[in-house]
Structure formats: structure tokens, C-alpha cells
Length: 145
Image (cartoon, rainbow, N blue to C red):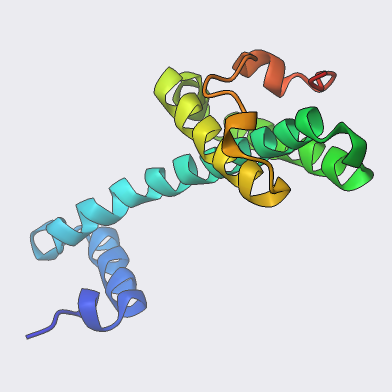
């Protein structure tokens, strides 16, 4: 038999909130509730990674296709930086998340792949290791040469 969680997520979440408000803890669907609470943080980490990938993608395009530099890339770079800053201000733990070398490198590899797809340049055009630090990438004055 399907639970409300599987049939109607909104009804399930309303029910869980009501049970919490009424302190009826023994009736909570703890397995799914724990999963959903964990997922809340995951969504924010995914959001900041997406912005970092977008930023890195446009910085790569800026550097490796200088003849095509335009206002849309500049706007995208500035907007990604603003969004990252906003997320870090709202959720300070995300600063540590993007400072993690593995996170930064994974975002770079995804941006590198996207840059190859979007530019039509061979992926080997873009170095396997990114030559700039996170702090330089986030610096509003930084644009690669």
C-alpha cells in the first residue's frame, strides 16, 4: 500500500508539519522526513555548484574565445558571482563547500566539458587543471587573459 509520501508529497508534507506542530512525534514518518531534511541542504549545495559551473564556463569561454567576448558573457559572469555571494551570505556553510578542492575541481571539469560543447573547440583546448584559484574566480575584477 502506498503512503501519502508516495501518492501526494504535498499532502504528506502538510501532515508532517501538522504532526510536528502538535508534537505528535511518534506519528511522524521519520524515514522520509530525514531524507527530505537532508535533501534541503543538498538543493542549496547543488544551486551553488550550478552557479560556480556557470561562472567557470563563461570564464573559460572568455579566455579561449577572446574574439567572441560580449556583453552577455560579462553579464553572466557578474550574475553568477552575485548569486554565489548571495548563497554564501544566506548559507555560510556553502563557503566551505565550494572551498573544498574536490567540489571546485568537479565544477571545473563540468564547466570544461560544457565549454567544449558550446564552443566547438576540442576539450583538450581547456586544461585539465584550472589555473586560477577560487578567490580569483570570485573576484569581481578578475577576468582571465
